[in-house]
Image (cartoon, rainbow, N blue to C red):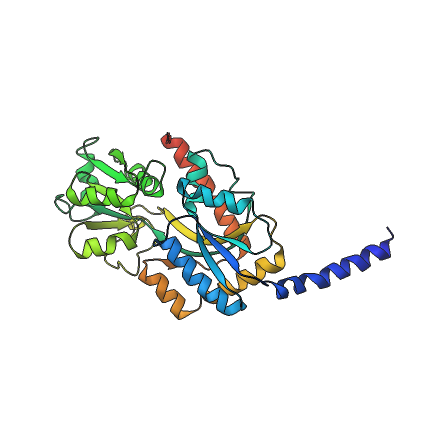
Length: 319
């Protein structure tokens, strides 16, 4: 092939790429959610789908595919065509804890195209109100004086509610017995009843319980305080640099072209400035996370390494 023909074909391709983005979408787009309807991830996906549909003139439909901690949905998306018609409102779990603690059929670092992070939240350290502690420092002292005698619950071994709590315990030098439940709801219920003394849950699941006096909130694992819980200190205020957050972000199968990726990312960046959208996130106890595709991809890689090292050091094994 002559040099001039190569230049001609390259120019045709360059001209066609913007057209691909402009022509997309020509039919409804599915946003796959790895959990059942009703949780934070599902709500974020539905609000995002509504806004993207309005902006791009095509219907965006949420499709729930729960199972295996989100691995079922992740595997489905990873094996889908990268044509922009299958998107994934993923959570951190599918890119760290799940593939690091169980066998999955996808590669979290190779099988997806990062588009935009959307929202993040830390985990709130909640304790039974009967515990004779008023704040985080007193709690740490109380637990250290009773090493190995108190319990903490989680939504399951290897879940983020387990790992966030474990990271806090390790940093503070505390020894507590882990009690794994099948989901966060029973773990929270047993914290309220006093069967376990601590649970690290999301703000959205603890706000009402705290307001009713059923649990006491001592700290949050995000870098800063949460707007919905201004009186709950960040653990980083006592242990500088501490951070354990989860996020929900939009990804697609690997190989999604730059034109569609950038068009979606541009629309998501607009949402990060939309007061109505930001208000919906705030009411869920979530913080917006503006990103570019490149920065989101870098964050995914960095957090994978962080959780891999924690899981390895703690010897977390999922049966």
